Image (cartoon, rainbow, N blue to C red; front, side, top):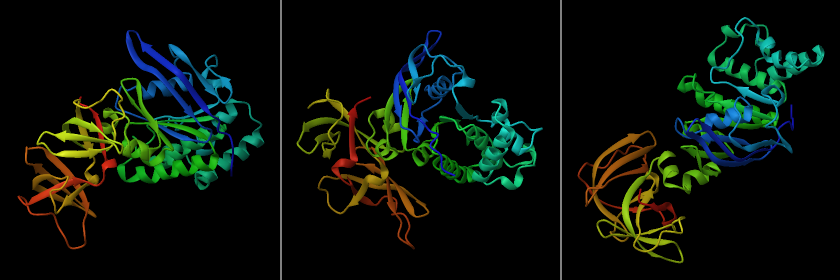
Amino acid sequence: MQSTAGQSLTLDDIVHRYGGSLAVDHVTLEVAAGELVALLGPSGCGKTTLLRIIAGFITQTSGKVVIGERRIDDLPPARRNVGIVFQNYALFPHMTVADNVGYGLAARGTDRNAARKRTTEMLEMVQLGHLADRLTKQLSGGQQQRVALARALAIEPRVLLLDEPFSALDKSLRLDMQIEIKRIQRAAGTTAIIVTHDQEEALGMADRVAVLSQGRLEQFAAPSAVYDTPATYFVNQFVGTANVLPATLDSLTAEGALVRLEDGTLLATRAPADPALGPGSQVVACIRPENLRLSDTPAGALEGQVELGMPLGATIVHEIRTRNGQRLKLSEPRAPGTGPRDSGAAVWVRPASQASVTVFAAP
């Protein structure tokens, strides 16, 4: 089954206050039709508030919400044609799987035969047609999640909202369900917004990720861009793992910049995104563990020694202490039959490339 039910979603300069507290701070997002966008951030960052504003459960202090070409701020939740999968699924335990999926259609007065056909289509899409007559309380957590998804999609929503949909699942089931939901969302052609605090979930599922902090939008970009080129120091620290080296911006070059670390080492980096940073500025140079390399020569490298190593399946993570006491994590592929380097071994460490080092103003 292929549908083009999804429509574009625009959040235009959304502000929301709870009393004197600012929960959403001038957030603007343009979501394309059929796109899956993750709202990612720590608890209290405003992501659930934004979801509730889209659904119509709360009215924003200012700004507007547009689906397709229609501003929907004046519409109650029932008339927004938005599907919602809640954190606890909110299924009716006394009803069968088919009755749960068809509930929204019945509430809208859909013709009985059309509703039955649509329910069957949805159950086949989520691969639960053989359980149509079973009570939802007799299902596993993953099956209940798929019923909730089918119910939300049955009404052909213009936008599908998913509120921490995997939080009730065991870790071993989460990846399977993430793949399943993305498959179903693609097949239905539905525009989807997923709220999560799990960065792996957001980076793995979403076409684009909106990273939020204290109500502000820090970055809105493809997962690879959020990870490889974080726009702010917050994104750099929240998404993935990064080594942080205090430094002074030495000079700006045609290729990027040079920073001087505390031990005097000059390090070539990507140009800082902040135009206010210039020579003499106090900065931090940030390098992800997989972007560090062990070097045989001191050129452009930091001197250190191995503190310990941890073999993690196909990779090894070494903790290295530099000459001035800075601890760095370095991740490298593990060849078959090999283990970590000996503790106390002298090493040189350098970035994989100039582009792999990101510079921010010192926090």
